[in-house]
Image 1 (cartoon, helix red, strand yellow):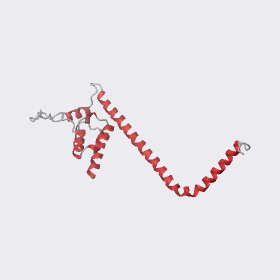
Image 2 (cartoon, helix red, strand yellow; image 1 turned 90 degrees about the horizontal axis):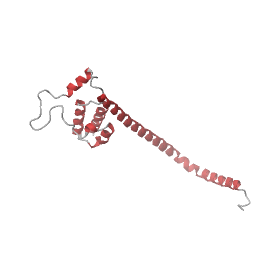
Image 3 (cartoon, rainbow, N blue to C red; image 1 turned 135 degrees about the vertical axis):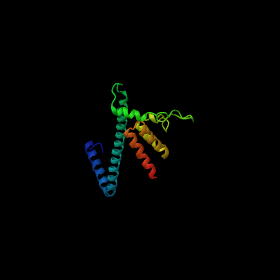
Image 4 (cartoon, rainbow, N blue to C red; image 1 turned 30 degrees about the horizontal axis):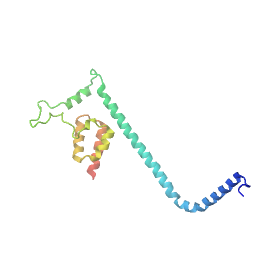
Length: 165
């Protein structure tokens, strides 16, 4: 019988049958519609938050690179602010090496190995593994040495979160 009825008519009959089946399932699907809608909105919201966080990380990295370009200024381009910052980093006159074998004041190594070479994203990745004492030491070190706002903010926020626990 299928050879007598043209193919487009057979396809139309199949479409009608599928439509009837979907119409029979509609009441069950309407009950689940609010849940599906809410989950779709939540997924879109989480994807947007993740994208935003990725953009923040990329922005932090870019700003860190731009700040490090300040070191590439020619030697003749010094400003009063630079001289004040350099004086703050200099050791205290007469402090010299520690008799116990330590280093002179102001030239201390970072409290966490490799900290000076960490990008903002790399620091963010390591923050959870640091203790409160290490975070406090890093914050003080950053304030004394480079005083970079994104690093300071990140360390301060992590320290505040850790103290709340």
